[in-house]
Image (cartoon, rainbow, N blue to C red; front, side):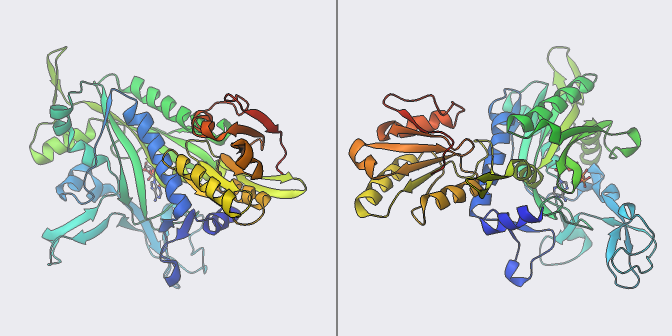
Length: 447
Ligand code: ATP
């Protein structure tokens, strides 16, 4: 993990928040490479969950909501952790995570447990009084539940269908740590899949399977994933069944995504608290009922950490260490790097032209500093799948070299075919499928 954290800082993936002031625990910033990675992870999820499905629509709801939402959802009463404080150093600990009844930091005696609500509180308007309290949402789910009827009335969807959302959530976690694994401010990607009561078990299994496959489709190794079905006594207050998809993080197995069968708990609670009907009219059976819901919920940061850990690799190439992220092409932050062999004017102009043709299609970097081998290594550390090299021969034959990150094989293709060739490779085509006029250049030789 230490290697990963330092590489992430050094190459512009992730920085500690407010770094120049000593940071803020549980908060991190995404840098120029990290933001591209994050956008790709969110985009891959949105494409597979919303864009490609007829039974899903998206929403984007506000972070601040009427406090009655949290009364209805049970968060004000139940979103709590048992907390103890060290009488000596005053550090606070989550009671259920302690192995012994003394402070892990100084060995001091601990106070009695007291329940601590992990929702962040703030006030609307200038007066800090109870009536003005609002909470920073700890999950995005409630924004989808309270909009259930709005979506049914406008989106022309029949059951089963889902509402999906990505957005920020805040939890005043007592202990944070393991880099971006447990933080206080994070983004969630979650959806509520509404089904006819009685069909929830089938859909729960369906989504477990879909979500498990999703990580593998994006390159996560199967033996790094496992499914943990929750026992009845470990379920959250709203759930009738639940399971976690766990990932083998450097610090051990940890929850990556939680999938909960929430029954009709949320819609029923909102109907009771608001006095508004949350029933659905089933055209086929002519029945009115409150749908059941299955919810897969995933933290963007947790997904990013899993993708980073899984892709990280150290290899020896030509007696030197090569550090490389073998990101899946859809996740890779930079897709293509254009590397002119020299900074000589005519070559630079030629390479800039190539760069300009590729940029509208791919996140592309232009790098003309240092020896070509160093530049390949730099791109490997960013996980860039393809490097395009422009050399002096390019000026004569109008061809460029494409070097593949994982195999380090190279092909040479006409510049006019570069864009379409890269589009095909980034859709999964084998490197050695050549465009007209193309040829295999070098195999496994990184020179
Ligand atoms: P944990 O047991 O790790 O505290 P949880 O069971 O409270 O998680 P859920 O409420 O199910 O988590 O949240 C859904 C998902 O949100 C988790 O699977 C995880 O990916 C992400 N998540 C939850 N809390 C955090 C956090 N503090 N920092 C980063 N991601 C989080």
